[in-house]
Length: 309
Ligand code: CP
Image (cartoon, rainbow, N blue to C red; front, side):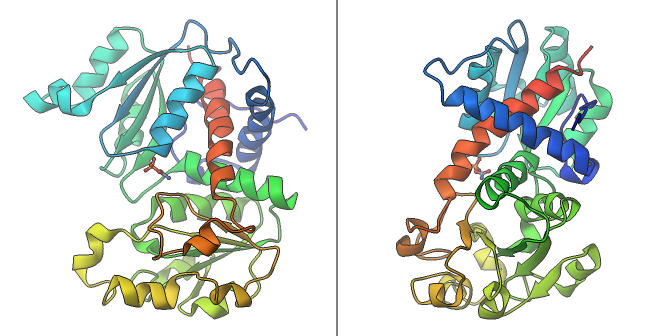
């Protein structure tokens, strides 16, 4: 199967066709082999400059992108938003016009403002890779989740994938939804009604407010982080109550198929979404998701760089 990539940006899985998603997954399979060699580096981005601009906290995504860039032999600039001219009132676009004037090739950006990467992609010739924007999109997270599902299950089509938690505010849930639906999976969103409104059904997912019912026939259960910073907003009465009804512990595992995958994008609130018995148990693939994220980000950077002028 000859799958072609023609985009200079990766903004959202909503924008991608099924074939474009498969192109990234298949390319990542090849890059995963590179990371299993003694010499884990290839010259694919030699002479290219990648700028990492994280205007919101990140551990996994930032480190994974930087390592991916190193493995591809790119030149790397890590911009510190707090120490940049943003603090003097310069706009995001003006800052990046200056970076472009220095002949940088690709910007990897995380930003709290929904749509920031799309706005930049329309204005700049550089490649823009979205590392998470507001509650909108986190395409490389969803791609690494889907890669892990495909690797473990052998296929994605027809699988029952349940995503649990704060769907309302989750860019991970939205990105997984677009990617999984395009590849033919059945997607369920589960959580309290305040965080999982019925309106999501209009997008083609099942909505369920009872965890036991949601997970009964699940092949994959992806647990989202409860965003403690939103706890004040009254979406649920207390963390303890959330955990009792929507967390997975040893007891809840009795209702889950023994071959179902337990996933989490991180960071985990241990004892809230998952207890340690489950997070570190035999059905958990959480650290394999992290490993696969490196291959996905190498593939994305390689494909985007191939479409730059
Ligand atoms: N999963 C994820 O995006 O984690 P970070 O916020 O640590 O990058």
